[in-house]
Amino acid sequence: MTHALAPAAPPASAADPARFLRLVLRVDSASTAVMGLVLVAAAAPLGSLTGMPVAFAVGFGIFQLGGAACLALIAGYPVIPLALARTVVAVNAVCAVGCLVTAFADVVPLNGTGVVFLLIGAVIVAVYTTLQYTGLRRMTAGTA
Image 1: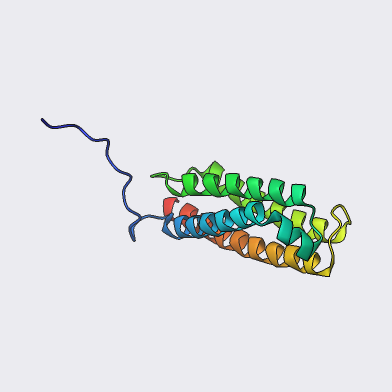
Image 2: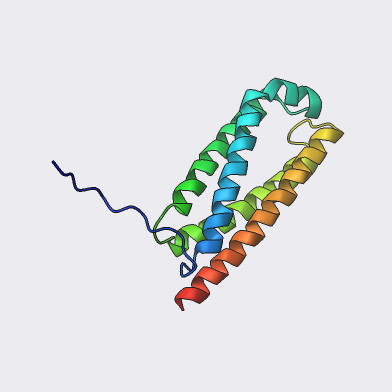
């Protein structure tokens, strides 16, 4: 007895104009998932170290886990829709700015370690944003 299987998504080949963007999305997804798990699982110790309230750390971690799932889903599309690629770049840019605002606006009672923690996060997200923007530009140049 034979079964028809749905065709698998084509592998990212050198001819795929979104190859670089897919790679960056996958790496961003994995690192975001790890950070989300750390924030949720170690919210209390992180709170003691950074001054971050446990509820904030857990909420931030859950937000990151959701974001990681979205990034992985987008990276797996056979053809990455331009609107989603642009949305990823925009959301990451807003998140980088959000980390900076949170670090300096006293909306969360952070100590010095907490401020450094969020500043490092802002830099990492800004790097991903830049790489994803580069991938978006390469993808659109490949389809033009």
